Amino acid sequence: MKVLVIITTVSMDINSIENIIILKYYMDQLKLIGYSIDYGGISSFNDFENYENIINFKFKLVSQKKQLSKLCDFINTYKDNLNYDWYIKIRTEVRLLEQLNFDNLLKTGINVRTRVYKGPKKILYGSSIGGEGIWKHEKGFIYSDIEDEIIPDDHIYIFHHNIIELEGFKQTEPYTDIIENEWFHKYQWDKYNIPINPIGINMDFTKYGHAYSGHLNIE
Image (cartoon, rainbow, N blue to C red):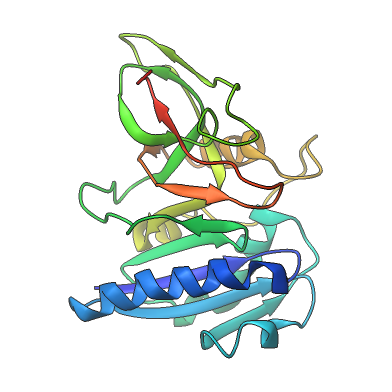
């Protein structure tokens, strides 16, 4: 299985080096069981050398745009060279705490933790808020027998090559949110009928200190 890890950020901050080392460790473990792993990088600056003693960037793009627009530019720039099964979009502030699980991923949707969820699913580490750390007392889910609201996290998500073919990363359009937050991602993917598939990812978001994954519909 071929996987492209796309690291996207404002800058390849040296303060996130430990996160990149941990990311490489888990990707190297996947290589031991037959996965093929490559890395792409997107930064607002030509500062890829900050991580190049840890990982080798096969693809690089300098873009001053915001997060989803950065990724759209990357995919449209390299589209003819992208022949991977799965893609992992990850920010430098993400510190993985265990291996990513590729079982039961949706090949026609975005596999991601949720920021807001109303529905019946119960998922360990399925929420970007509510875990230990700065967002411990935030709550973004409501149990319901009917799944009728999902807002995706924007820190890390996994998608199949099918999503590129379905134009899920076609150039973004103007929107009121200039920082391209979680609601912006939902808005863009809804336009192309790309569903959100909630999954669990055990991680810590280190930008503001610590923000560990919360559990979805599990108190």
